[in-house]
Image (cartoon, rainbow, N blue to C red; front, side, top):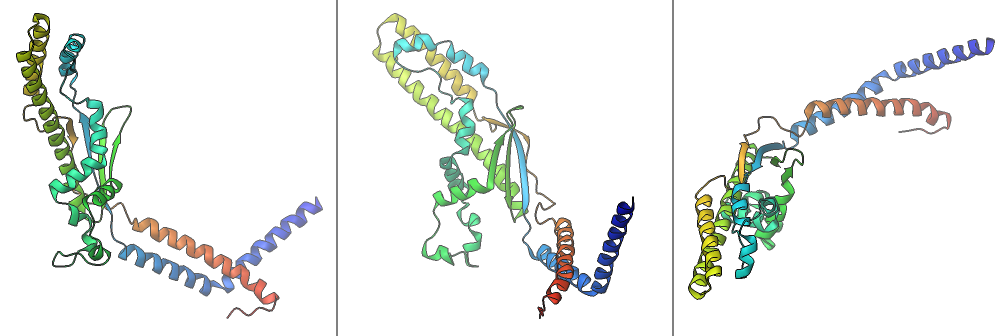
Amino acid sequence: MERNINALDDVEVDVQHIINMLWRSRWLFFAVICVASTVGFIYASLAKPVFEAKAIIAPVSQEKQSGMLNKLGGLASLAGISVGSQSDPKNYLAIIKSTRFHKHFIEKEKLLKTLYSDCLSKGGGWINECEKKPPTHLEAAVKLKNILEIKEDQKTGLITVSMQDNDSELVASVVNRFIFTSNLFLRDKARTQTEKNIKFLSEELKKTRELEIKNVLYSMLEKEMQSKKLVGNKDEFAFEVIDPAYIPKERIYPNRRLILVSSVALGVFISCIIVFLLPAFRKKGINPR
């Protein structure tokens, strides 16, 4: 019982000792906190803001179209050609994620200098490291892939296209234009393939004399003509826009409140270390000047 009482007395003495130490060094304590807070405030004020724009899209269902064409798959093998001019919708996402498509998008939208604006002079010429070696469209495509994210939700099938940059208007514009260009690119690709198939089938019909194969070719040609009509001039050929990107009003970085709170906490931590280490230095005869 006496040991427990002595232990409690020791704890009270230690707590009182700590409080006394902090009180004696209160000016140093608050000075360090003020310095840390000031540094955090300056950083939060001067750091470039980062904005993020997001758009949600959904793959356009083409099951009806694919089903009609696949019915002729067995017969088409007799003619030695493949049925269906449309790209597999499963491949659409892979196509727009590719470096090749990013390069196409940059060239079409003329985004090379926009992506390397920090290397441009007021007159629009290259400066700094870009002056000796101007960036290529391929390098710009790789850079764009790093800041423009395309993520698919495996549960819902919805796709989120997002981009982060210091320019709030730029991120919204690029995301929306990227989706529009994706649909345009895939639509033109499908139309081109359809036209090639129609030309091929028409030529085969002229060459073929066997009635069975001619019937197959006529059926395939009819389906390809239907496919061409389905492609049409739809703006949302491959992806339907559920929610377009809007110009963000709030920055995602820096979080000023978080930075200030973290600065104060860091100041308190450093202050405590300094206050508790000073007596140790003094006991060892070290004069921390």
